[in-house]
Image (cartoon, rainbow, N blue to C red; front, side, top):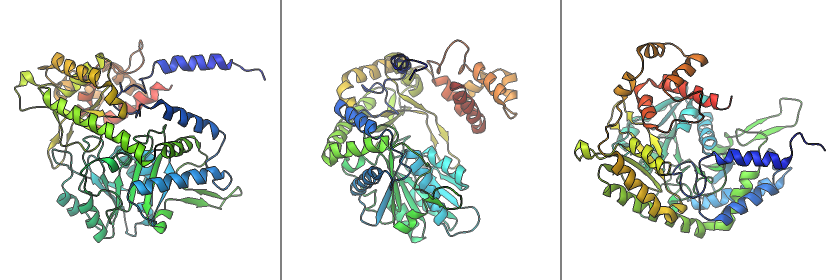
Length: 484
């Protein structure tokens, strides 16, 4: 067969494209990627993916390897998360799909009338915003305290017959806070309301974290849980496990139809045809690591997290938000020191990037009936972090010294920096061209460069300054333009 392009040339081009990506290994990116620091695991995952490359995960009765691997991954997760024989599960394509299916299942099992309500803290993952939007639930978000933990009494007061699902986090992504799961789940159970624990980021590491109260299926009122193997299970993207207590409850997750002239369709997840690659990789890694291997990697994460918490508290002008549970840290300005000694977390993150490390900037949030949550910088700690800690610690301290005393960009200043005619245009619905003009005006898009600006602090201030519908429309345009 004559190829349009030679395979060697195609792979060379792909190598060029990958060189422009943020590094996925080595611990330089403290979000999005989860590097075990064990090359053999990556090689095992790649080999497993290649072996099932032609397999269609749509039909486990035809490709029986899919059924065996999924069954064994679910059993491993059930054992990890305190489940018994009543707990059943499904492998999904990622945390978002697990969350979507948990909400869809609860909605379909809900016996109320009118519009069902999804009750959750404001710190709940954005996937639940998407789920409420897709499946027609009212999203009811409860304020959290200054440490990022929701007040159980306030949450319980919001329960009612119109609530189809209560969601709590173990831990929440923004602040690494575990919600009072046992109390909230018990209250939900007393009213016949399902309770989902979003352990997408914590499910494969918290079982080995010390001194935690029960947060998983050991809590009677917990009816479902999500845990991502492509996070601290170190599998390639994307694979997650959704566990549900009770077969009859879980069956509402499925879609089945024989009402067309083709083959009978039965889908346990949102997708029909799907790759078995991530499943095979996740299955292989659970067998290679087992509980002991995961515990060893979790111990490395715990040591690094503890060191970084102490380091941040040592750096004048910064503070850790709350008491992180799991290998995540949110860092804010320490307002107890004089203004000229404070460190703005967003300026700091931008400066750390100049030293070769990528941290994640998070906007603040003015809660409707609670404390205003400060803007923060997020760090995700992985096993490889321990290996690069001296260089990372040096970069964090040096960058703090370089921006100490630099005033934060207030939302008001960010808004005032925009031309009046641009601000006036934001009061009207933006079409694609108008949105592009705004993006170019604020410097997020230019004709001469690709990607985002080097300094993200001004952009995060703008996100806080503008109404959410406006920023959401602009971000939609920004991402859409990247693939056009």
